[in-house]
Amino acid sequence: MGAKLKEVLTLPSLREAQLMSGQNCLNQTVTSLTFLDISNPDDFAVLLEKNDYHSGELVLTSFFNIKDDVAKQCETICQLHKMGEMGIILYYVGTIVPKLSPEVIKMAEELDFAIIQMPKNQSLRYSEVIVDVMAYILKERTTKNIVNEILEKASLLPEQLRTVEVTLKLLSDLLRSNVLLTNAENEVINQVKWPRNSSTDLAHLLRRVVVEDGQQIQKKDFAIFYKELYHKENGVLHFYLLKELELLTEVECLQSVELLQVALNLWGKKPGEVSEQALIQAILNDESEKMYRLANQLKIDVKGIELMWLLQLNDLRAEKKLKNDILTYVANFYQTCVVQLMDDQLIVLLGDYYGTDSELDLAEAFLQTSPEQEMIDSLVACPRLRNTTDVRNTYQLVNQLAWQLPKLFHGKKTFSISEIRQVAHASKIVQAGEAEVEETLNVLAPIMDNKEQLLTLCSFLLDAGADFQVCSEQLFIHKNTVKYRIKKISEALGYNVMRFSESYECYVACLTYRLIGL
Image 1 (tube, helix red, strand yellow):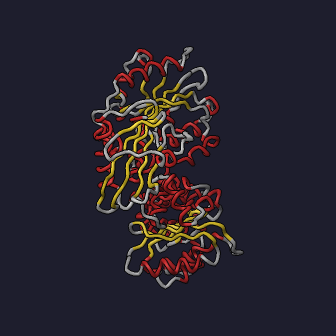
Image 2 (cartoon, rainbow, N blue to C red):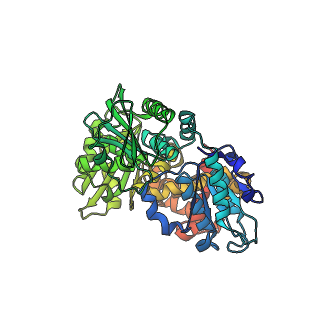
Image 3 (cartoon, one colour):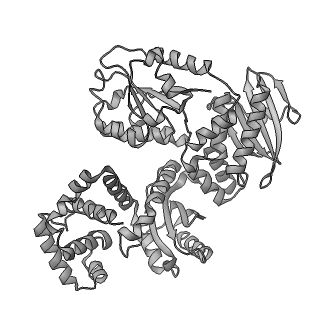
């Protein structure tokens, strides 16, 4: 069900609109429209905790309460992109928003996020677009190619969202049906309600009916389809579709079963497993219902998670011992402790701190005393996590950049999430092109030809954390020599690099300099 964006833009209500960004979205399928009543990301951050994904959706908005704040507009674009929105239809440019900022367009282009700007300085009605677009989408509705359509959508999602649960969410939206998957003991593995805020107790409803395998029956207002499946890694599974006020077609039922079988083969390794590994996977994959179910079964307070360590490993042979060492250490300070290996890194989730020492020092203290520190390339400490959305977003950020850390920070192993964000900032500068890099490096121009001074400054700011003693040990020179060099460097640059307010530009420049050398 849906229509290509390029087709939607030819409709009468959008014919005069202008596509400001997102040319790569033209062949993507629009499946629905929604409103963004609150356009300040600080105000609707709580909504993101629901961890839903809105593939193929266009958002109607005017940016009313952030009309003069370009930074907030960019942040809103990023948040909507993370939620899976295809783009926005922006109303009242010239009336509410004075003009669409180039920074907002640039951000949207980087994310392949569509901005459709309605005609400027005109009195417009939301209802015209809503009626026009939804009528066209529903007219074009077909369920003959459910498998291909949903797998195509899934292929466009970030890798961590290509899961059985997200596939079932896409199926639920397409069929406008409730979807339920249980194991052989009838324990719920995945449940997707339609509409999402439905209060219907699906499990209770199914306990009161008998449906033959591969058949569909009607119970009160529901059409209920049931199919028993067997998967080599998960055994017997029970699959249900429940649709209100309308029967499902035979094609819809058969294609839904086929889709689930494909999804299980691609992404369904042990979906019913109850383990800390499965819990962390559910958090990272944005599978909220599964996450809370597993957390309840494992007696883990996921809402209490406030700190995460991410340890990048270069040798997995002693992984189990390292994992046990971490659990023994953190149990002295935290009530909630989860440690699991994901790929080649250990994820440590911590909550309910009852220690007296500073939490910020615990990671460094552990690393200094660990007998397995040689197998650890880096340890990133991520404090003040508000919810599992923060856990997931922080993990994804670190995962993108962790491989660069040993090359950017020589001899350094422990990092704060703030340092990771600075690496991300420097990476964006490099990606922006030569002009942006040249502007950033301009602060280092007075010493760019002096390799000794450049090496000292990079080591002092990046590797040693502005510590003279650490810098002297890394450069194999006397501490007083480091002080003398830093004084001369400050004089040459016109910045006191020992003062944070003045050293920040130099810090970013040093990061950028090392990045372009990778």
